[in-house]
Length: 48
Image (cartoon, rainbow, N blue to C red; front, top):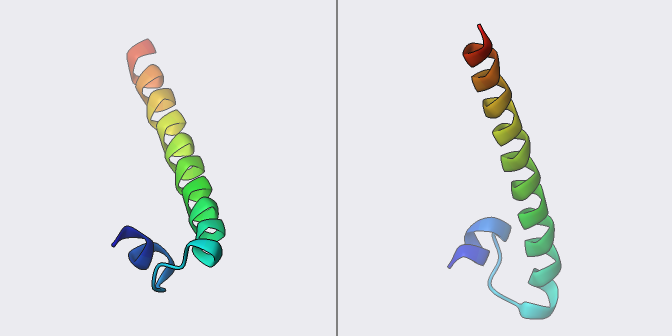
């Protein structure tokens, strides 16, 4: 079900895996950046 939600297409392994890897990379990068921002904000508040 998740691949349909992410790519908007029916699950076709040969075609969809590339799109899924790109989507996963984007999501991982975004979550990593958000995590860094949250940690830096926490350090700023903690160091005051």
